[in-house]
Each structure stands twice: as structure tokens, then as C-alpha cells.
Length: 422
Ligand code: ATP
Ligand code: MG
Image (cartoon, rainbow, N blue to C red; front, side, top):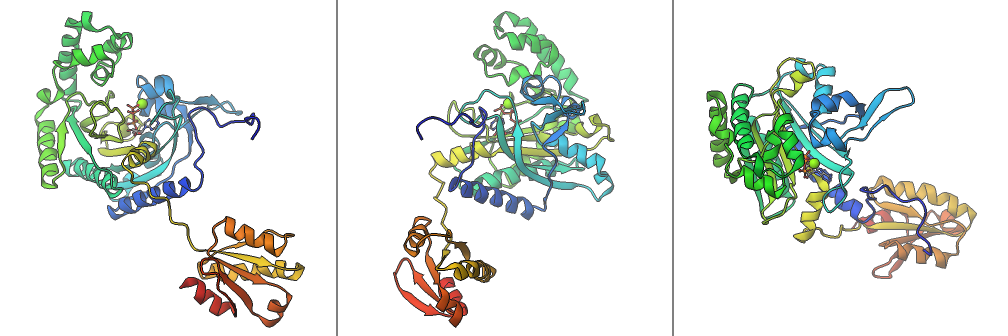
């Protein structure tokens, strides 16, 4: 093209084109199949939600709500947001649809686009795609481990190697306040070493988030900070020990990372991430944890829950670096070439007979010479061509040409179907 077209896709978004779109489809099918093997059902919630859902459900002092959410007023004056994540909408739906009255726990999975005004770069987009699962209504550590096992199995099923599981426990409403006081005290004592402005503010608003800051001065400072696992109450300690021993039973290796946090009140106990096992790489593939306080925060009664979300773009990127993306196999394709007006009409009916037998069938473009239609069939990598004209319609036959062997036969439809399906 001479000039770049004026209209381009927005920054931080991309088109998923064939043949890559088949890779996406394959991966998404694979993830759904595994989630369903674990007994999870698909759920889909709207792309737009009341903005207040995210302020409450994702937390006013998170990156997402502070600076990443796309929020707008619609023509009726309602303040809406494009969903930046999947957990809060699912909890809204759980409450709104009375899922708490169904047998608990509820197991749900989702897959779809999310929107964040992030700085576009490798592994970071403004329209991103996540696959995730939520297990709502069970407080046992076995469910934390089930969610981790699901995320772990999914990444392994795609053949991804060299990944590691990081886990931590951030306690609950009984013990976290005490821990945060100790953390705050430590950070305040060393405030002269804290050069990162954003984190100086976080000292008041959300000190836990300083632990997970990627700024060098913060990393240095937090290395010797008190850790949440040293402050767990009896219940959280028991849950933490059980979670680790269950992971051990399943031979899922983990590293305890005491700087792994979720900066919000409703996150409790287990938090985890699955990351590439490469030094210095920040691209978390999947992240999750227990959020026993969220449903209550959204107006329901206290309901334990645990879940995770994985980024599809980052998953595909790591698969690419590990050479795991095969060019998708192109299905056997039949093109119907037609000569004359009557045949081009009949081609539509004939195509239907092949499709009913699961043969991928395309009718060649109208008003072109037979030669040009055959060229078209070759260009779209058809395996077979059926040629019909007046006499074939009259005799209820067709000419079948195998484009690989160049063999051509006159057959009835049934025999043609058998030949192509071979
Ligand atoms: P990060 O620290 O990388 O910003 P996050 O804590 O914002 O990640 P979560 O909200 O936990 O990420 O989302 C779960 C997963 O979704 C991440 O582990 C990542 O794989 C993916 N993800 C998050 N933000 C983006 C983005 N802007 N573009 C692509 N993938 C993303
Ligand atoms: Mg982020």
C-alpha cells in the first residue's frame, strides 16, 4: 500500500488475524477443556460495568483503578467502565443472580478481553485477554491448591517449560493489621532510603504495595523488611502449612516469595504467581489468590473465595520463545467451481450437502472463467475442486479433481463425499 491508511487500531491493541487466530482459538479451547475437566462452568459477564464495581472491587488505591481504567459517561449519564479484570464482575454476578443459594462451592471460568490504560510494551497491552477461574464458597486450603493446580496444569498442557510457582500468605483481618504496623514502622525508620515518590505516598495509603514495587530503591529497602508469614494468626498459619503440604503431595514445586502481595483488604491468606524461570524477567503469566473479603465488600454476606487469571498474550509470547507454536493444520478444503448461471445457483445447494458431511466447502467467485476459479481454488490451498456445468446438473454427477494428485473423476455426490473424506 502506498500510504498508511488513516484509520488505525488504537495504541495498545492488535488484530488477531488468520492463521494466528487459529492458534488463539486452539489455546482458548484447550484452556476451557481443562477447566471443564476440573468441573468449572463457563461464565460471561458484560464488557461494561458500573464504575463503582471496580472502585470497590478492585480497590481505589490500586494501579488499575488509580490510573488504568477506561471510564466514561454514557449518553444516559451513567458512569461506566470497561472491565479491567474479571473477579469483581463475577462476584457481582454471583450476588445478583443468587448463586449463594446454589450448592456451594461454585466453580466458574471465563475467557475474554479486558481493558487497562497501561503503557504499551511487550506483554503489556490496553486491550488484553485473560483466562481465569474462580471458586466461590469454600474456605478450605484444598481449594487454594485446586486453583493453583488448575493454573499449573493449564500452562503445562500447552507445553510451557521453565516456569515457577511463587507463593506467599498475607494473613487475614485478624493478623494483617498487626503485620502492617510492623511493616510501616520498619519503612518509616528507613524512609531516607526510600527515593521512589509513589511509594512514599503508599506508606500511608497502602504500604503492602511497596513490597511489590519494581523500583530499585524499594527493592533494596524491602529485602530486610518484616514478612507477613512471620505474623500469621493460628488460623492463617494452619491454612498456610496445609497449602504447602498439599502442594508437596501433588509434586507441585513452589518458592515462597515473601514480597508477593495483593494490596487490598479483601485479599486473604494465599497469594500466588506463576512466572518464567528466567532471571530478571517480570512477565507474570498467571496470578491469583484467596479473596475472602470481596463478596462482603460488594454487599453480600461473608463468603470465602479463591481464583486466578492468566494473560493470554504473555502465554502466547512465552510459547513463541519456546517454539511451541505450530502453524495450524489447514483443514481439507473443497472449492466448487461452476460454469454457467444454472450451475452457479446449484453450487450453493451442492455446497450444503458437503458441509452436512463436515467437509469445509467454499463456492468459487461468480462471473469468472473456469481457469480463474481453479486458480482461486489453488490460492486458498484447497485440497479438492468440484466442477459442475449444465450436463453435470442434468446427470446428477460432478467432476472431482484432487489438487494434490491431479486425478479427476466423474462421480455422484455420495461417492465424491467418500473420496474427499478419505
Ligand atoms: P502486572 O504487575 O504485570 O501489571 P497485574 O498485577 O496488573 O500485572 P493481574 O491483574 O494480576 O496483573 O492480571 C493477571 C495477568 O494478566 C497477569 O499476570 C498478566 O499475565 C496479565 N496482564 C495484566 N495486565 C496486562 C496487560 N496490560 N497486558 C497484557 N497482559 C496483562
Ligand atoms: Mg498491572
